[in-house]
Length: 346
Image 1 (tube, rainbow, N blue to C red):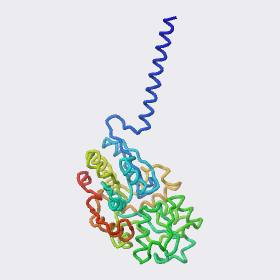
Image 2 (cartoon, helix red, strand yellow; image 1 turned 45 degrees about the horizontal axis):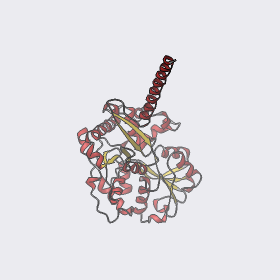
Image 3 (cartoon, rainbow, N blue to C red; image 1 turned 45 degrees about the vertical axis):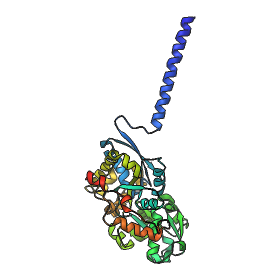
Image 4 (cartoon, rainbow, N blue to C red; image 1 turned 180 degrees about the vertical axis):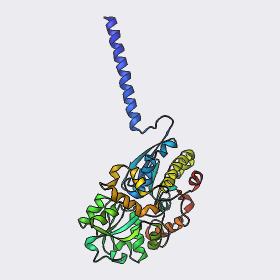
């Protein structure tokens, strides 16, 4: 009997060890631990399937994160503004969103810095509902209209206010409606919830092809952006908390190296070749349209990841005109971006 009890106790002990090991393994997997020898980073992106954010997924698809010894998790979020909040809260290591957020944050006493610039122009367009084209033929006609933006406080919201400001329309004389992008933006225009709105590719091309909307102001190239806004407007970047950057320069350098490789790769390949590397569900059921949309705005992607000269000053000027929290504040632009890592990567 004692022998049987000893064997039974041994079996129970072994089972307990196996169960504890399994539980431990599940905890590790859910926490996003990196494979042996790799540093794990989580990056929240303000809309992975929007083409303006394309370099994020493309870097992963090309294997450049892996080459730098990084295990990167890309987290999809509605807008860049949501990304900045998660970075500040320490929930993610980096965010990908509009550069202007770093200026807004400094005005609020918080510090975040762009470490690599992905887009040197917005890659957006102010679209007008086909139902409203008879009434809306210029930006001046947007007064009193319902204008769609990704999210209140987002980059699309600021750009919309900048266009209104340029023609002398106070921002409180338009109604901004948060409608997201893609299907939700298109549905809002079809249903008459919005008369016009700022959105990205491939939503722009989907609206044009379906006849639901038309372009009022095109910000899909650096040249048209300069004409519409009166200066350059660097847009999507990768930003990180300044304290994290100072404490993890080696990791930041590896991250920037990966992104710079991607940007260089993009400028030596065609839109078709770039599209081939992207997940099929990004095409929204029409790869040809996706490629056409990409061709329309390839020039917005930075060739080297550097902040363009004069870009920060131009963005700050628009922020001071459109964003109340920035008005009257002294902003140190050198703390909102850095070319330190990009210079080494190039």
